[in-house]
Length: 76
Image 1: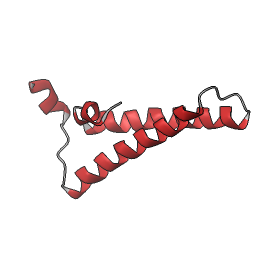
Image 2 (image 1 turned 180 degrees about the vertical axis):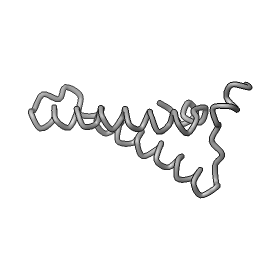
Image 3 (image 1 turned 90 degrees about the vertical axis):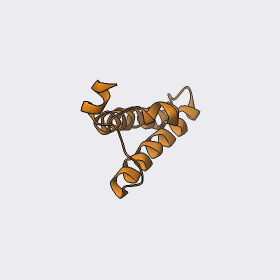
């Protein structure tokens, strides 16, 4: 998922997406340890997406970014 697509998500959706990616990352790490991982690049891509989401959440926490709320999103 690109940064532009992440900008449109609310804080709750970002947290949910991060949890989903963390779970997928865990499953890929288990596959890697069992030597069943088909695409090792996918692990790196997921790690970077998690970092991108964490950065956006931290920027919002520091006041450098304003994330959309559920109410604001319904209005658009």
